Image (cartoon, rainbow, N blue to C red; front, side, top):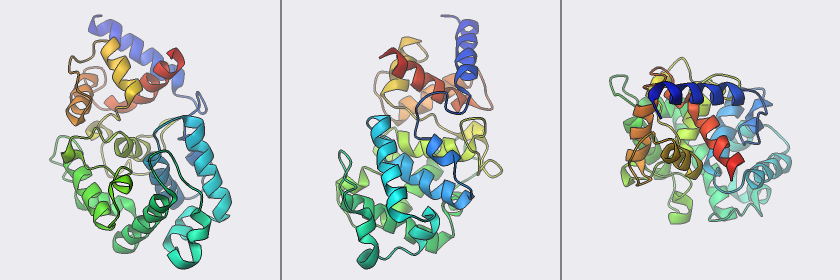
Length: 255
């Protein structure tokens, strides 16, 4: 398929899905939140658990919100493992136990107390001269992991790019924070250009990228994500990651 036809298809899909509730997705959990602090913190928690079936992810997060009965940011900031662990009991999800969930809350608390918020932590490692946010993402992930002594099951929640993971969920979080349209919230849009984002590659995006012959690389790793992002810049150099939501949901619909 020639570039003109691919661009026409991608832009058509973007327009089709660039609507609130255009398809089931965890992103809608953030749209009802009133404060940017809550969007940032709950957004990170949601993104960490963005693997598996959408309805299961949404169910987990809704149970958490119901359990704490307060805004997420203040719950995290004031979290006390001895007194508040009861609010996180039963939050086992596929590869991750309730202890991993509790550890994630504790890690976020330490990050907030050390840096004020996640944006400030990310910007500590961000260099505007870098072509992408890859190195900043690597530093961001390492700092968050340094706040935990837990095993690999917890570390699955916050992967490190230099270990060759696609880091789909971390890149998804950044898409939500940096881009702004009817889907993404863009609360970091003034600090980080969306042109530097890396597309979050999951099985759906991977499959559609291969089907459309966007790239020929077969290994689904961080290099795949970087190459795909570069390819998508041919269609929108300022906002290549805009196509992520539609590529993902196109594949889900076709399954």
